[in-house]
Amino acid sequence: MAVLMREAIGGTLRRARTERRRTLREVSRRARVSLGYLSEVERGRKEPSSELLAAICEALDIALHELLTEAAETIAADALAAEAATLRRPVGLRHMDLRLAGASDGPAAPSSLPLSPVSPRHPVPQPSPQPVALQPVGAVCAAA
Image 1: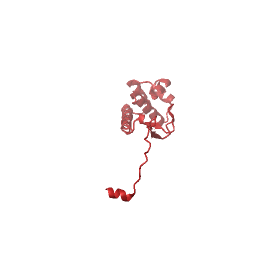
Image 2: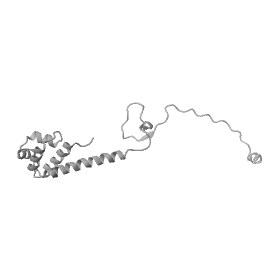
Image 3: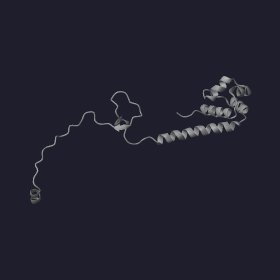
Image 4: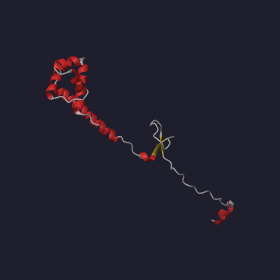
């Protein structure tokens, strides 16, 4: 799932606060916002207004545009990572063609086991070998 704007802003605020070695209490007092609400904003649970963001940025001594730029970069990096993950999907055997080695037809075994191609559930009957009459080499060469 993509990173939401409020999550990116909250993470950026928390990084800025911890880099400056400020506590939630100090920042909440300077920004005149409740400690609980600031904590919710940092965890990406609440989406603050632009006025509240400006007050928090002022309390942290950072510019609002710097906060928003870093949050936008976080979202862009997450989008690129998600796109790259879709490009790395394995190509080859379908999941129906694979079975975990040593697994029964019951519940799935842990994914740490190696994958192997599925063999047919019912063995295919093989024709029994028919005896072949051998002829001397000289007789075969003369017939040719």
